[in-house]
Length: 212
Image 1 (cartoon, rainbow, N blue to C red):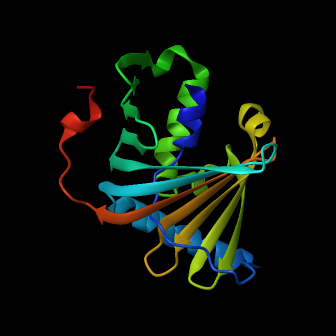
Image 2: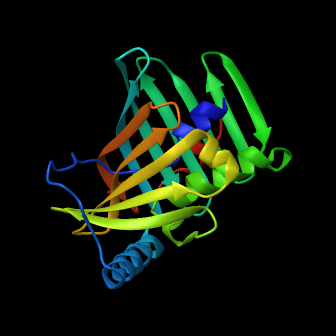
């Protein structure tokens, strides 16, 4: 259950990363990039898109590819739904986490678990890149790579460090929106999430953030 929650960290828009080697931004460049990302974040009220998630399993030398739909509604609603090759629904609705797997449904009060409080907070912030302002959560280094800005986030807190060595967030430099997330686990596994056909600030029905 927590694994699905962690994988859903984020909500994003999709494009392939360039093969060109990334170049680290200067301190002045990093400050300007983060300010622009934050200005964009304040204008985003909703995001709706599809996603492709690729899990690279080091031990098995294999890949697991899944597809689904992500819907975000500011300030605290997120619907992360896998539709292929299996069906699984994960919803954050304020202080509630709702999960549906097959015919099984469950509801969790986020306040009852410190782990879920951390996960949901970081998930909601990651949707638009707001994590870059959270110096208590990550050390941040910014890079440029052709048409992308890359935020290389190193976790500070013990629980996150035990799971991830780093998280990379790719931003489209033309509009400062998130385009891809790569999560590098301590085990050596890597999860890559790309989202497609983003629709920004469309009207979203709040009923989508409840279980049927």
